[in-house]
Amino acid sequence: MASRLYTAFGQGKGSLTTSLQAFSFSRCGRPDLEDGDKIILPSELFRAVSRLRLPLPFLFKLSKGTKPAHAMPTRTGKAPPPFEQYCGVMEFSADKGKCFLPKWMLRNLRTREGGSIVLTSQRGVKKGQWAKLQPHTMAFVDLAAAVGPREVLEVAFRNYSALSVGETLKVSVAGESFLIDVIEVKPPEDNVVCLYGDLDLEATTAP
Image 1 (tube, rainbow, N blue to C red):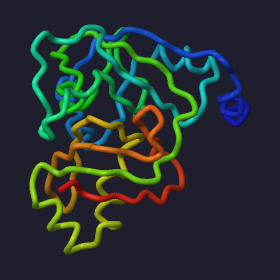
Image 2: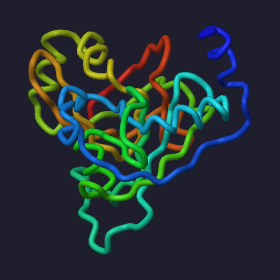
Image 3: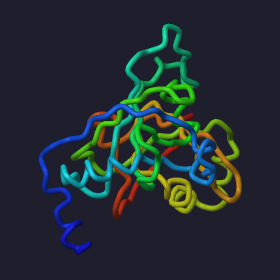
Image 4: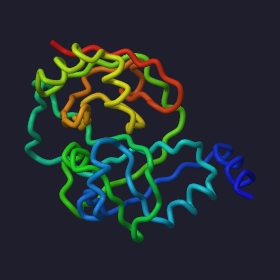
C-alpha cells in the first residue's frame, strides 16, 4: 500500500500555494530543529501534496507578502535579501493553518511570531555545485582549516535542503553554533540550489 502511494508522487503537474501562520520551534518544544531548514507543516497539507502528487523530497519557498519600510542592510553591505526562504519538511504535525520553523528563518523573512507567510511548492531546483559563504566569525574558518573543509561542510549542511543567496543560516559543528551568510551559489539560476541527494558541493569563504 505504501509503495503504491509513494510511486504516485512527482507525477502531478500542479503546484501548492497557501498562507500559514508562522511560529518558531521554541513554541512547539522542538529547539533541536533550529540547525537546519526542515519545517513542520499542518497535517492537512500532507493530503494536499498527496493529491497534487508533488515530487519527493519536498522543497518549498516561503515568502512574506510585504516589505518593511526600513529594511536593515546585510553584513556584506549589499541590499537586503529578497524576502524568500527555501525549506524542506520535517513532518506534517502542526495544527491547521500553522507552521513551525527556525528562528533564523523568521528573522530572514522579517516575520514576527505568529506572522503570516506564503508557502509555495518548488520543482526543478538544480543541485548545488559551488557556494560562496561568509561566516560571521573566524572560528568557523579556523575549525574548517583544522578539521578539513569537506568534513565540516558535510556536518554543517546535513540538515539543509537548499541554499539561497542572501540568507543567513545557522549551523552546528563540534558542539558550537555558527551563523553563515550565503553570498553566491552555482548554478546561479534563481539564486538557489538544492542539497538533496548525492552531492559534491564545493565551497569557499568570502574575504
